[in-house]
Every structure is written in C-alpha cells, then in structure tokens.
Length: 359
Ligand SMILES: Nc1ncnc2c1ncn2[C@@H]1O[C@H](COP(=O)(O)OP(=O)(O)OP(=O)(O)O)[C@@H](O)[C@H]1O
Ligand SMILES: Cc1ncc(C[n+]2csc(CCOP(=O)(O)O)c2C)c(N)n1
Ligand SMILES: [Mg+2]
Image (tube, rainbow, N blue to C red; front, side, top):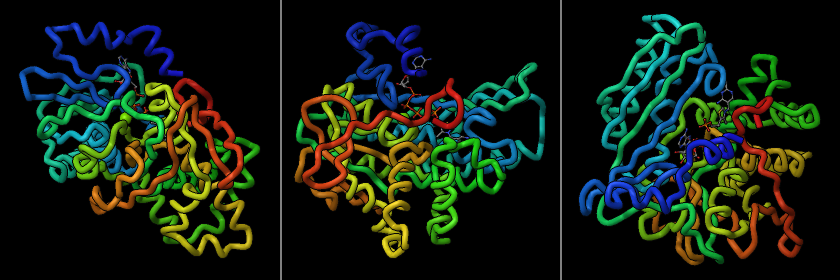
C-alpha cells in the first residue's frame, strides 16, 4: 500500500529524473538505492531507512540489537546494488533522554559501523514532541568499484534463474518465537494459521530456533556477495518484506512472471536442517516454513536473477546460494508445487505498512 502512496505523491518518472542536473541521476525511486553520477566514473549510492519503535522493534528489545539492525538494514540496500559503504548519517527523534538506552544503542550501531567500514559522519537529534515512540532514521552512502552501475529491477530477462542467499524466512520465524514468548502469537498470525504455526514452533529443532533468533536480532548485510554479483546478476534486491512481495518488484519492473519451485523452497530449510524431513508431520511443517520464506520480512538476504547456467560457485562469498525459480513471459509471482504441475499464482502477502497486523 505504501508503494501506491509513494507513486501518487512523490515519484517522478525516471525519464524526467534522468534529465535532472545534466543527467546525474542514474537510478531513482523504485530501486534499493538511488544512484547519482556527480562526475565521470563516480557513482554515489544513497539509501535511507527508518525504524520506528513498536513497528520495527519492540520497546523491550536490547538497544544494542536495535542499533545494529538500524545500520544493517541500510547496508543491506547497498549490498543489493553491489556497492561498498562510505559513511552514514543518523537522525534520532526521542521522547526523552535515556542515557542507558543511548549507550547500549550506540554500542550496537557503532559495532556495525566498524565492522563494515561505514563511519557515522553526521545526523540530527530532536525531541519526538508528544509522540512517545523512538524513531531512528539512517541514510547510508556508498560507491561501486569499476564501471558497475547497479542491478536495476527492470533488467531481468525471460529465462533468467531466480536465486536467493541464506534461508529467507528465518527472521520471521524469530519474530514468531518472540511473539510466542510474550504470549501474543495471535498478534502476528491470522486466526486461520495460528494452530499450524503453534504446532510448528512446538517441534522446531533447537538449532533452528537459535538460527531464527539470530536472524531476527543480528542480520548480516550481504555486502561481499553483492560485490561478487557484478557481472553475474541482472536484477537484485534485498529481502526486507518477504520473497513473494519483493520478487514482485522485479517482475513488475521487468514485465515478466516468476515461477518459484516448491521443492527448491523446501530445500532451503532441509539443506540446513535435514531432520525436519523425519518428522511425522513433515509436509505440513515444511509448508509452514515455506510460507515464512514467502511472506516473512527482515531477513536482509539477497534475491537476484541471472542467466541460467551461471554457477553459484562463481560468486561464493561464504554464504549459501540457491536457485529457487525462473522468470518467463507473463506477470506476477507463481508457485509450482510439483515438477509437471500448473503453477498457482501467489498473492503478495508480504509486509505492508498501514494495514492491520503483520502482513
Ligand atoms: N517518501 C518517499 N519519497 C520518495 N521516494 C520514496 C519515498 N518512500 C520510499 N521511496 C522510494 O520508494 C522505493 C520503495 O521504498 P521502500 O522503502 O519500500 O524500499 P525497499 O528497498 O523496497 O525496502 P527497504 O527500505 O525495506 O529496503 C525506494 O526506491 C524508495 O527510495
Ligand atoms: C516489533 C516488530 N513487529 C513487526 C516486525 C516485522 N516488520 C516490521 S516492518 C517490516 C518490513 C520492513 O519494513 P520497511 O519496509 O519499513 O523497511 C517487518 C517484517 C518487527 N521487525 N518488529
Ligand atoms: Mg531494499
């Protein structure tokens, strides 16, 4: 829904943006980062992301976790453009000054800054007025090496394969576990899926639960992978809202349809936790896990398309990479349940601001 709002009120067509300032804008609204060319052979990437208390993080979250995630969610947009961080600015709106919260928040934030060579170079700090919630807004700047000018969402082609890094959906599982811990699972599940989700959470292997909490609390920006995708990927984005909805941005921009393979999506989970297949209710567990991949956000894994036959090994960056589908003529995002079955169209059910609940 927020995408319609942006288009109604703010978006300038790229054809107009491309005319601005003698052609310095090379990517504008609609990609993970804007890309500006201030001088020949220099591309500056810019992205901004806001975290709002109770929307993006819990009031009771460890502040260092919030600090880490605020920068990483921005770095992830640079990764999706194959860019390297240069620095960032931080805007904070706070209801009041809490020294202990700020000390912990800044330790997590600056730890990420140091780890990814992205110094804090400025910002703004204000009272939140009568708003009682904290708002953290970060703008990150980056550059790409060589002549790389990003992977635009409109550059995908029919017959491209669709790849993802890691196990998208893990962070949603972490969020479900967090809500369950609070006795509030009903707040993030539709009544119709509550029972199924409860059953899943009850039997998940401990190692999987730990990975899920880690994915939610300490996501990693796939910066090195983004670099290695130069010359391999055509379109790329980071998975912040869920695979089905995020992939739709690529299919819309490229006028294609994506057909995802259920077997490949299940394999994302089975590859790491093969014991899932031995569970008495394995089919139903895997179905629920595949839903978290399709609908869950906050993962910050990358999803990219590339000509078929590009070997994953070429881009190995210490992170698992899996082909989960392909692109072809048509529109929308579809799921193929068996090798020879007709694909079914998926409704985009990823995160939408300005709606009730999580989806
Ligand atoms: N108020 C706004 N004015 C202009 N452009 C906007 C505005 N809000 C969002 N955009 C642009 O719209 C596009 C979609 O925004 P969104 O924040 O959903 O980005 P995203 O990369 O898909 O998600 P995420 O921020 O979670 O990584 C981006 O290109 C963003 O720069
Ligand atoms: C307390 C709490 N409740 C819900 C969520 C889930 N969540 C919030 S925003 C978002 C999508 C990305 O947002 P944006 O598009 O603004 O980058 C997701 C998956 C969370 N992380 N914490
Ligand atoms: Mg993004």
